[in-house]
Length: 90
Image 1 (cartoon, rainbow, N blue to C red):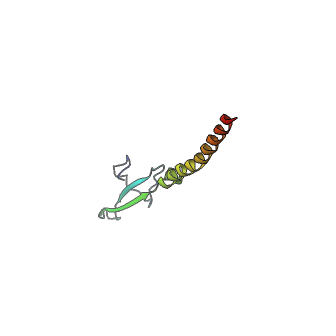
Image 2: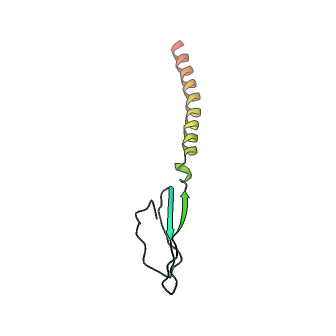
Image 3: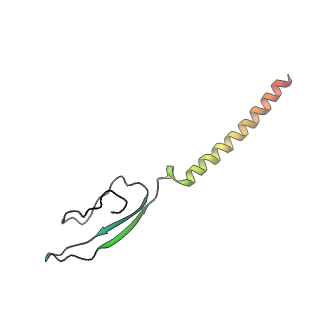
């Protein structure tokens, strides 16, 4: 699989699946071929998959956090500024 430290063909097996755990977000190309009982190999078939990041690492979530932070901080700072001015007048 391209993008993973697994660039060697695996041993021939009766299993019809391959498990990859803990893949980070990105695009991966999985290459597979089969072999008949007469030891005739098929052509290599490619499957490209894209893994998206989890929601807490997505760009939209980072933008949301910044927007919410600014929208909460600005009113707080404005109120504090008014409070300081009121205390300075007295």
